[in-house]
Image (cartoon, rainbow, N blue to C red; front, side, top):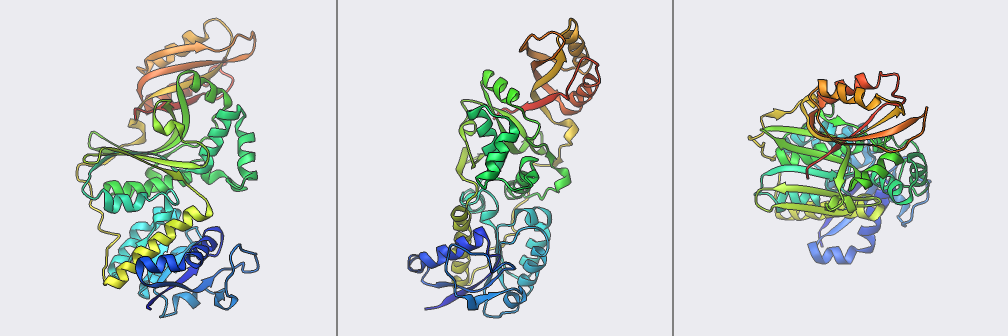
Length: 431
């Protein structure tokens, strides 16, 4: 029986999961593809670390060149993460006539256009299902299952760490730092959680989804990014009173022939499906012209979930190799109804706003006066507590306002002597 030889670079959590699946499901997969998908070589810098899968030590190497230079290896699987040296490894693999499977969303978000072009020139492919949503088959669905559709918007809970923290704060009425600490203890958050909680990881994934849906590679600097680190238990509680949950969303939304691409905390109505996505789960809500509104849901992280997506890519590539097919990753069609990206200043949204103001006469009037100068209309307002000579929360919901106008107004309000903390403003999206 013919074999397809795999070179694996990175034998961490997901890499060991890939080896485990290929080993334990060997006969099951052979029935599906009639080919032996075989790990020929594994490169890892920390081979002394004990893994939860047995592997013949003779196939290990410290040097990625042993994989890249091996003419018998058909597919290189890159699972080390980061831009460098992952970019160099993938580029060299393509130049040497090997297909590539990766879960590296950061690399593809920053350098995907260059790498996909190189793959196309070499008639090779980069498959990257595990880069967004782990085992959720969103990439394949967009590339194949929904190929006849045009898309108008994407709303995604794309980061399990942030979603766990917000869910924990909501369910257990705990503050951000306590929820983060538990996420770290459970292994859901890194020691330095900034990529997750500040929205960077979600932005990387959103860039890939935007490319697949709209055919446009957006630069990181063109994505509006705001994390969850300033969300307090007060905001979680007040949002509930208003009938909302707070979620960190990645959004690509086509409005008036312009594309808004942004990541930020968002108030979602309780009745919307995305509001009930808890813990480390991810969900991606997509509006299309033919299939309508769709939601993809599942665990957004985890060894076997992510490894399942990598193996799915390996099986797809194996079938392509058997059939002598080349299905370019670079043939995504540009949505010509999108003329460009909307500037961040021109975003429009309704907002939940929490001021921390002194409990004195005239404070609310002064705040309202500044908002009025910037044509910002108040839908509702409530002062949540009464504590003389102390800062108390003043919660407002405003009608749709332009981002630039709101930021200018809040800058003036935050300079008032009766405002004791930086004001929190959270968008309220129409889903």
